[in-house]
Structures are given as structure tokens and as C-alpha cells.
Image (tube, rainbow, N blue to C red; front, side, top):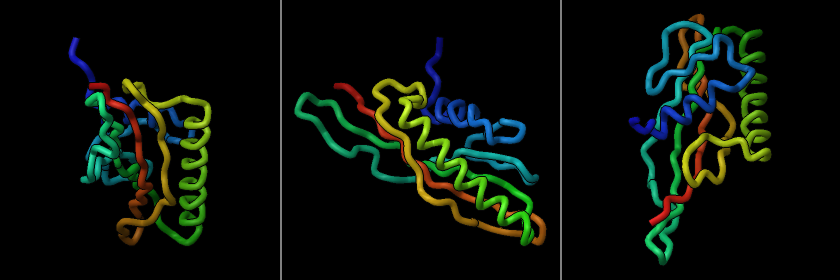
Length: 136
């Protein structure tokens, strides 16, 4: 049986979030319609610390992107969604409910921002970090 990629495993973890409408999350692709979601890996240093035994503490940095309706009233709802999503990430982390990746230690995020807008939609991006230990 072929092992899943780490991003596929993270995608499946995010899909468990009860806040997501329709629940489907893509990897490195967001549809051009509201309530579309994607996890998009960002380029960064992978190894945080090397251990004397040859193992290492590593990170995967990625953005959770949301395509949403865009208007004055919708922006308030979208901001609340971003806050609630980060609260969910924090709660899952505190419970030890992490993506099913060997050596998983922590998942955390930062405040979401608008990446781009049209007259009727916006893409919000929430930066996230997943930390795990890779044994030698």
C-alpha cells in the first residue's frame, strides 16, 4: 500500500473541521467559487533542529486558503470564520488531535488575511505550521 503524502494527510485533517461548508479541501488549487478551500505548502526551511542521533525536528508551513463572498457584511462573517477556524486548530492541538503523520508534535496558525479580491469574492489565507519529529 502506497503511503500518503504529508500534504494529503494534512488535507484530510483539515476536512474534519466542522466549520467547512461542503467539507472538501484541495491541495495547491482553489476553485473560483465561494466556500472553496485549499491547503498550499509554502517554501521554507524544513529542518528546525538536528539531533545527535541523526533525527530531526521538522516543519511543514502551509496556507489554508478560503474562497469566500466579498462585501461589507460578508467580510465580517469571513473574519469570524478565520477566528473560529484558528480556535478549532488550537483546540485540536490542545487535545492532541493532529494530522496522522509519524512524529506529529504540534499544529498552530496565525491570523488570516485577504490575499486577493474581485468585486464579489475574496481569497483569505490563514498561515499554518505543522511540526513533527523524523527519526534517524
